[in-house]
Each structure stands twice: as C-alpha cells, then as structure tokens.
Length: 108
Image (cartoon, rainbow, N blue to C red; front, side, top):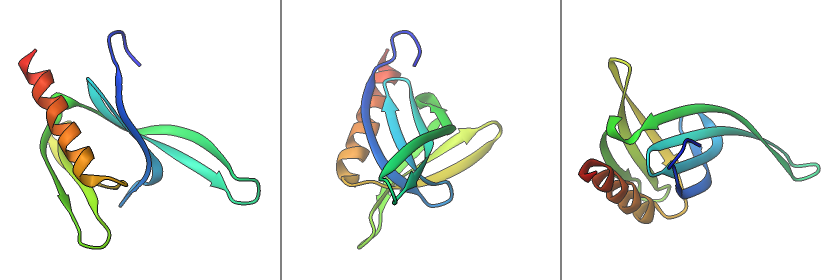
C-alpha cells in the first residue's frame, strides 16, 4: 500500500470473470488479488493483483441478484469502461462503504 493509504474493507470473494480472490477497498482504490486454494490441506495462497482501480475512475456502483447477490461497479480502465461483479457476503454494506469512500475522496 502507498503512503497515507488505509484499508477500509476486505473480503474473500469471487468475481464473475476473474474467479476467486480477495477484494480490497482502501481510501484510494479498489483492488482484487487472485488466490489459489488447496482443499487437501486447507491452504490459500495469494496470487497476483489483477485489478487495481483508483476510486476516481469508478463511474457507477450498484448491487444485483436475487439469490446470488453481487456488488458491482463500472470503472474507466485506459480508454474503455469495464464492469466487475463480486459475490461478497454483505452486498448492501459493501455498496454503502464504496459510495461513502468515493464521496469522501471527492471532497478532499
């Protein structure tokens, strides 16, 4: 993490296209690190960071789903827009926290 960066929320989850990993929200960015697990000995290894989006690049946030709920966001990556959908435990909590953090970042 960078100087002055603080972890706000972190959860082991699954993204529709990226697969299993850990979603992290800091006061500066949203990041997703891939993980690999082994059922034989219950180990989990951190992999590479496959998503690192500054909060100012997040365009839209929402939640969706009836049975399988997801917290979603669209971000500007280079010149394109990319949408990500994460299956987290508390979608409502994640959504509120992301939106609150973005507003705080914008007001600074």
